[in-house]
Image (cartoon, rainbow, N blue to C red; front, side, top):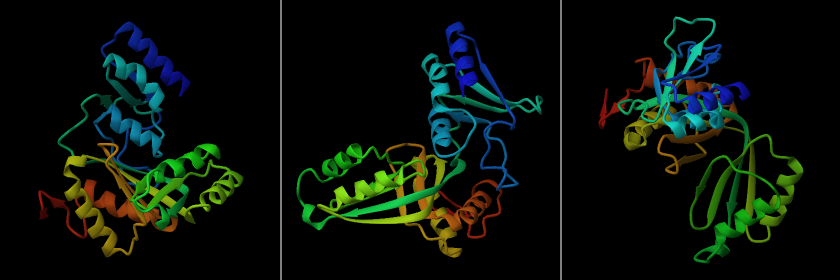
Length: 261
C-alpha cells in the first residue's frame, strides 16, 4: 500500500490528469478470480465503491491510498503489469450509476455476536451501554444491525479471544450474549437505490439453494449490502450470485424493475 499512496500523493500534488497503479490483475474484478473463474474486470467504479470493496476483502487498492486522489478529484486507473494492453479499471467520483451490482466480495473467519436485553425495552442508553463496553475492551465491529432491544454485530479474526471473553462478561450484566463462530460476510457493492431488485434476486437464489442469511445490513453506506452466512456456504453463495448478476445464467431469474427476467 505504501507505493500506491506515494503514487496518489505525488499525482495529486502535480495535479495530473490520471494516476495509474500497476498490479497483477486486470483491474478491479467482479469477484475473487481464485473462486469465480468467470470473474471479469469492472471498467469504472466510484471511490466509495472501491473503498467498500477493499474493506470487505478485495485486495486491490487500500482506501487510504485513494484519499489524495479523491481530494483532488483525479481518477485512478488500476492496470495489470503482466497484461499492459488491458484497459484496467478507473476509480473516480462517479463510477457507473447505471449498473445494478458492481462486484461481490467477502470476509471470512468472522464471529457473529447477538446481544439481547428485554430489560432495556424503552430505556435510554442501550446502544450507549453496549458500545461503551466495546470501547472498554478494545473490540471493533465490522457489520451491525440493531432493534430496540437487540444488537447483532460481526467481529473479525483479528480480535483477541480474551478481549471478546471480557466483553461478553461485561455485557452479561444487562444482556444475554450469544456467539456464533465460523461465519462469513458476503458483501454486494450495489446501487442501493435499486436494492429491492437486488434483494429479490439474492433471496430467491438463497432460498432455492438452502443458503441461510443470519443477519443483513444495509443503509449506512449507499453502495453496500452485506449478508452474514455460515462460512461453509459462502463459496456457493458467491458463485450463485455471480451467475445471476454477471453471467446471464441466473437459475432463479434476475429481478429487474420488479420483473423476473
